[in-house]
Image 1: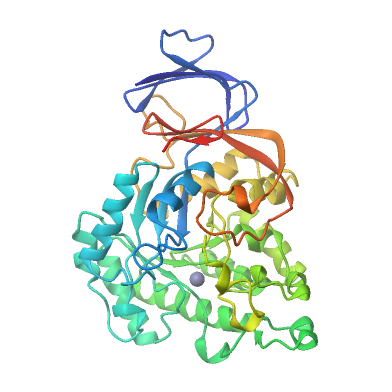
Image 2: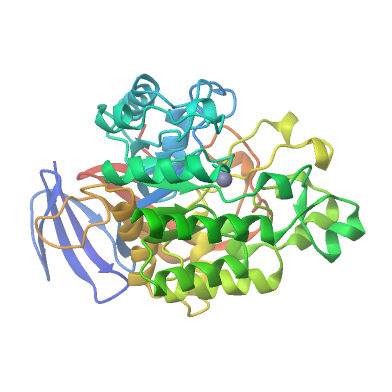
Length: 427
Ligand SMILES: [Zn+2]
């Protein structure tokens, strides 16, 4: 298939034409001509397809809330060409068989590259290491290992996980939460949790694990990735560790860049999430950390939930929010329109670095001739109000319902094939 993209602005810079042929960028220049299908991209920003390090696709086990296909649709509409599917499914993705099943479902859906994450411990039980080598050697080629939803709390087990993943050129993606400090936790521990009568989730529960883990990673000489960093103190710890040469990377979610614990005031459990929404000072520190590169990546932590698990009492609700379809808009709102990130830096934080962390060849590549045509075209000037009923996800727990956000994903190509055309997903 050959497509001529006319008048696109790579990284938001000067407009050019881009010829896509046989899955790669075949030519870039002014006034290219071709008999091929043309896409009028006047005014649209061209970026490498986005890569998510942290998506819950819920299949196998909770197909009532999301499937690999519906999650792939949501991802494509969000501008993604690859997503990492978290391991906390039922059964847990802790064997070569389960990760291969998820990988195959992803390739059957054919809208984004679905990259399975392998569990660190058997059944996410935190007691015995899973078959990390078998998952790495499987057809799914797992390189990211995580018990996300649960912390690998035992320091001896975490040390061994780091040793194994180092040998596999993999990485442990840690959900940093000291469980003894968050028993019964419902929201950020602070003045507000006390007033609302909800058990607090203290910042130190995250920071204590990050401090321990960067020291373990340094000791082992292994890579460590920190999931959904949420506190100012965590940003400081990661900045310190990087200055020492520790091989640590970190991600922040769109919701932690935009929302604060003030959202808990109405007891609307849509805003219950783990780690919880924090204070305005934390949000400012997360934005600054993403801007200066201390935080490497934006990752959605897209977490679909059934209505009965969200439209209930706060304490009974499950934590988690949707993220794939609005992630780029939230990043534009919080980071681009505020002058904190350029479009080139958005590509770095949402495509280039996530692909490097996940060891994904073919994604997060420069917009150059010969590179794979995994591309997204964005209208930066569009604004729209989020309507959960209109989302491609099977669930409706969007924290952005009714909120006006900037930027719209218009076209997406996966290896040169359109997965989204004029804002419409192709499968
Ligand atoms: Zn998590």
